Amino acid sequence: MSVKSKAVEEAKNSWVREIRSVRQSYCLTRPEFASLLGRSDRTLAKWESGEREPGRDDRRRYEELRRLHEGLGTIMRVAAIRPWLEKANSAFGGQVPLDLIRNGKIDLIWQMIFQLQSSPSL
Image (cartoon, rainbow, N blue to C red):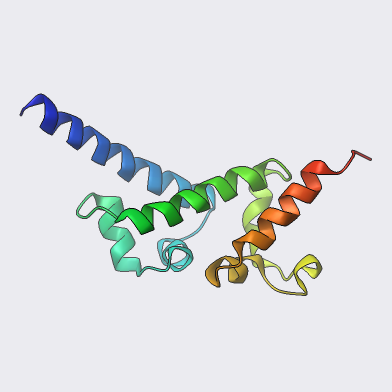
């Protein structure tokens, strides 16, 4: 195996570990995480197995979800993220945060994170 081939394979394996790790950090099943990415469970399974690589837009969406998890981790315990994502929230007019993400309204969650990070501690 050439040095270039080895580097490509290592990058692919890194991606496989990373996407699975982020999905697991959200404590979401493959179908649940796939829906946040706007992809099928089967497509995500192929990404996680290394059988297929996501395109640029899919990687961008994945990166957005990874950063969102990190942002949420700055304002709540990591173990509280999944329950919070599943519960209707008055800050979002009674909408469920997971639905906001699925519907492309992730910016509303980022606004909340920014407001909480900017607020003086009580």
